[in-house]
Length: 172
Image 1 (spheres, one colour):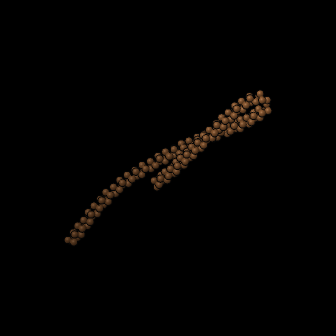
Image 2 (cartoon, rainbow, N blue to C red):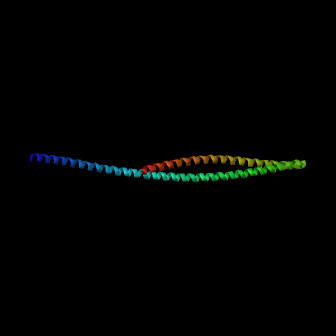
Image 3 (cartoon, rainbow, N blue to C red):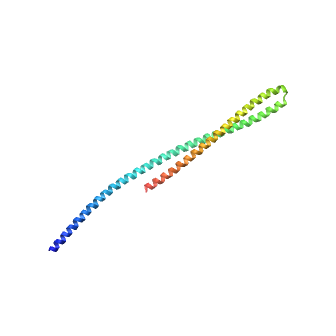
């Protein structure tokens, strides 16, 4: 009987120890649930932040693409103007050569008038040449700006790809 009482007391002590351990496990499970909830909130917060950043980057990329298209259109317009000026220059040169040829054939009294006309045409020719040079210089500047915009767009696209990878990694 004494031995049964000792066994019962030992079992009761073991049961009490197991109950204490069970309470500790329950307390730790509650702590872990809290930490997990905080972790989930932080993860969702980071995910939302990445989504906003990705959206902002996409918007910037779209704006840069529009600016790039505008610069391309400006460059095409300048190219058209250069072509027109070049055509005018050729026409003026031909006309100048024709006037110079006529001036040689006319009488010496008419040579003075023709010389004045040649000088005027030469001035126009020089002005057309100057405008063509300015247009070519502006075209070169636009081309350089277009190159810079292209580099910015490429960098933006790379950043967007990186953000998409981070977003995919965060979702996993």
